Figure 1 (tube, rainbow, N blue to C red):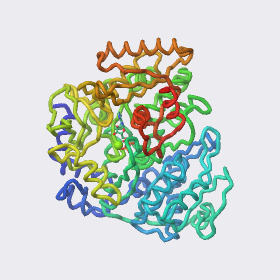
Figure 2: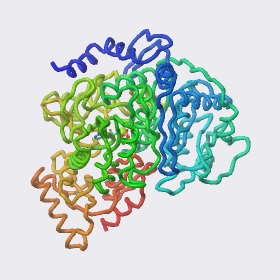
Figure 3: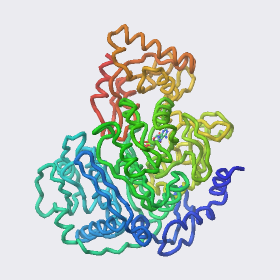
Length: 631
Ligand code: ATP
Ligand code: MG
């Protein structure tokens, strides 16, 4: 058995001793007494009896050996700021922020809502909460008042930390009016609002409620705030899922399990080493930002880049210039960002020295083969490593753990089950396990979920149990709601969400398979496929595509020609049963703010239904285009 297979096997069969070993990579004030308490499934408690602190592990413990090394590199191409904070400097900033929170009366277990753009203060705020045992709830800065209000309501924060404004593509986006409106919409009122004033946008202060960060920071310039040791099971944060399939779920994360999972993932999955630089292009409002902009790299003693700006401004080479400048060894992004770069001059990929880069990790949505090939070739063969996970899990479920044992990637596959995850493909009708190769099933995880995964849904244990653990017939398994197939080598291929399976005259097809096939046509940049109710066949596939070269769509005849070509590709690759009934062309597809295709909304429009909760949608005009092309 190869060393990874053995590593994985031990993590499942010898669970407690495996994780006891991993737990040594973090500092504990009191060592855990019990590795995993699963006496009340599906609620798992990790490292019971142990006390620790996320901020200590991310910052304080590095002061001795790397106090003067870079910890946080803040780069904003929006405000032309660039500043490196050493571990010592980060430590000081976090203590200042923690002291301010304590002045507001924030104590262990209190919630603090963070509604900030991608600025250094956002990381000080998160780490300061962790430092004093407060539970942070970061809300993506792109959300407007309604989405923000529901999150304020749900988290009931004592304090909100915000800013006057963000900036996107050089345009100032005021935050404060949205925040004020959200607070007025919410029945919960925070005691205090701490405002980081970037001097981008004038704003009105509410007397007695709003406070200025710069002033408070000055007052606490030299204040020291020790870390509060908390139980391993103490919640560190809550965070909402992306809302792709419906109302977002409030994920609650623990402290000790999360610290251990991230600490072990840095070398084993990401091949990161202390002293190196990690560049994750996500946003702190998403789980990837929590785990791999803030906590993971810092726990691993790495420097982390926090980037505010677009990937194509001042030009499409900006990210690669940062890789060169800061000798980035690990980079993490999303396929949606790579598709944006794909429209830029490819020469920008080779303009910089990228020799420090060990790999580019991509996650969040399916990585289609053309995009993977384009970026891999463009970067001169830098390994592109897909990884599949969820807000709920906090770290990858499927990938290639090159830090444990080097293994080849396969196009279209995020890889194998990561250690700690007892992944099972099951039949969604019977719950029966599909252990053989090349069978399609729902991707589930046998409990206990490994360290770092969600403890429960915030304030709603019943929703946790009913949503995730009660959907597979006859079995109590955690459902990812993703449909997958595993090949003979143990590599998984994600076929789409369980909601997205189309049933055409009794044939079950993943929307993903059809999309993959369509995007292999040389003039298709992006495509969304949905199943639409059909009297005759039950459902038919409908495709909405973006052409690479829009000039090929000049008139109706040209569009029909391309539509015909696309259908032929599907016929040849998958068979006529998968052929979409129509392929319609648009210039943008409706997505969540985190870049995920909102198929459920497209489907609703096609079926003339109400598209439902659209609070997490990015560009409302994209949905309107769908409506328009449907006529
Ligand atoms: P919601 O659960 O609220 O509907 P969401 O599932 O989009 O929203 P996230 O937790 O941000 O919220 O996304 C996780 C999902 O993203 C996975 O379940 C999967 O469908 C998809 N996904 C993530 N990474 C990959 C990947 N590498 N390949 C394919 N799909 C992926
Ligand atoms: Mg989900």
